[in-house]
Image 1 (cartoon, helix red, strand yellow):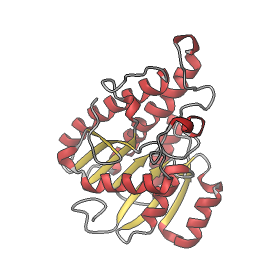
Image 2 (cartoon, one colour; image 1 turned 180 degrees about the vertical axis):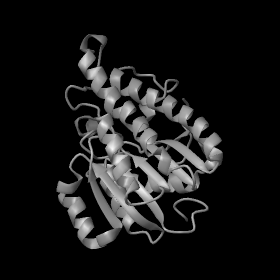
Image 3 (spheres, one colour; image 1 turned 90 degrees about the vertical axis):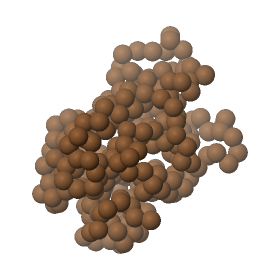
Length: 256
């Protein structure tokens, strides 16, 4: 199955959050594909990641690593300039950015645990960084069939919230979903071949989920490689007709 529909030449792909977890697994699977030409791996320490260094040794000129802290708007602007010096357009951008319990963000259990620093940290990484990434890369996404996919979370669904808690994480992912929905409408007017997706990878064995894995049902804790396979399958199966929608790892839609 083609990575992106109606793309005849090898695709140019950027993954933000590429040095660990799901992002790293996505990079490895993309580089194994013949329909990917240039892969741009972006993270705060992309040039110092041993795993990305190994991939670079195996794939030579197909992998470009760029250091960028996506929480810094000036860094995102510089990233777009650097990417444009290496390619004229991008066909696929995947944001795997997310934080749950990395201080000052935390998985609050009650109103008493809320504070401004934690909420700002959650929103900056989970919400503001992905949409500003899209803003600054948008000039490279205008002329070709393209997909922008960001990892959201089922707990960001307002109608699905039956347990409460995790105030900052839930709210920041819900806000991300709304921003992606709005962006999908604007981009469709500018480029009818554009697709914007919010994707839930399921509970995956990464640093984000490790403190909470004890309550995960058997068979529902996924490896990063499995989550990456599901993400790329969702991207391949959903095009402009589904832009602005929210999907779970297994292909089922998630209510807002």
